[in-house]
Image (cartoon, rainbow, N blue to C red; front, side, top):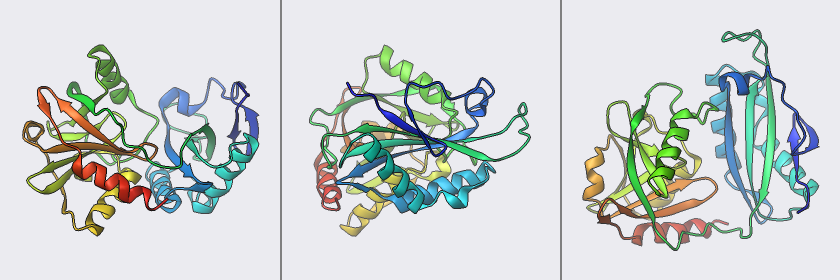
Length: 280
């Protein structure tokens, strides 16, 4: 397999090169945020939404340099890395921003640094999973609801522990609850529930990540006369819902087949995937 290249603070390196020091704040404290993005047919999907979320997150974490990381920066750097890796059209990316500073818990400055990784994709389109996902609720470590909850931070231990639960119980994904016991999100996705003709999703005030695909799907549903309600959701609704699906920026929409003994349809999710791919 050909060696892959990454962008580390504006310079191109082979991905296996050792670039971080032991004092890196992302490694030591999870002091950073990240974006996962997808390119289709040579175009970075929803670049403006990714840039808005990235800049908002950097402001919240008081990391400097956010004004430079706009949609133009994202498009330029992803296209450059595609060319360097000879990936012509379709790819997924992870952009990690960390505070480039010394100090212990208290940083001695707030400058930013970044790394950009790439993986090729076979198709430009969002393919809905042919086999529905099986999920259960992870209850051991609820997610705290605070001003950091909507960000994709580098501190991801709740998701790691939920991932271990998923692996142990041979699940495809797991629902995560917030500190109040209400539905928050899944390990790597936002959650949507179809119930009595409406589409429900946990409100941002419930502590879920403010996903880019979450925004896209909400707007897409509303454009097609489907009612979307952001709400506080009791997990008991999972036993009554007609349909459940997950969303994230790289996979698009994934339908859930089962929760415990409950089985779901995929009519709405399939319709939304078709509408999503029409935008490619």
